[in-house]
Length: 331
Image (cartoon, rainbow, N blue to C red; front, side, top):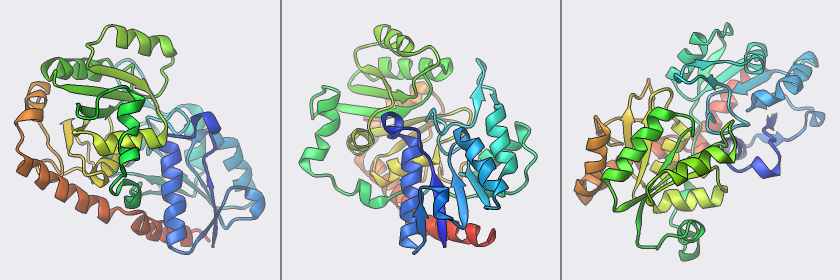
């Protein structure tokens, strides 16, 4: 079997969620003896697309008789992998090109049941949807050497012994911006790094957020993959806000990095997070802020161990097996 795996945002932007999803898929296929290719001219058995940007290429491949698989809602923090639009009230919709590529797909893959339900709420008619985890490459998060561990602190100019928390979100999500500001104020002993895609308003939006924030709160546009990995492995916690759709990719990577997750909000049907078992789930931002220094190492270790079990269950080898079964139903 030969599969086209397509996600090509250009070198400058090929470093965040969509790129990591592509690596996970290719790695999973390799571990299951499936060849992947980068071009339809290699005559693949299946074409697998990860971005609505490729709607024209997907339509052409469909017209040429190739089965089409589309992975949707795995990379909503990546501007080139994002399928949804959100308004000022955080309500979601599918823009035309997203709807077109999803409707023409022979199989749509989503990361969790809540993502499937959300697509239907946004008007999707195509019923050929299957839940498949984004997977995680456990070897990427095994013990880093001293040089790799220092990448993040050096890049963002903090001391190696300073504690920090990593979060990913949207710079125009005013609710969660307000939440992390409050948490940073209540937990001054920690640095908080909030990563997100470049907003529609450009760099000025991010610069304004940083000017108006405390010294321990840093708003950062998407960074290099190796820098983010170093940061995740060295973080005291991974902080996630779940008001619209949780991010299984970030969750699994934090678990693989043995970094405890603090989740505020609703899980919206996430099959990954299990509050009180593999993540902490405070009921408020005040509770979250107080939690950082009050948790015992035993409490954290329990969450870390269960989280790592979840990551192992979602390794790229297992995901490759599921993808193989999906492809086989189409050829």
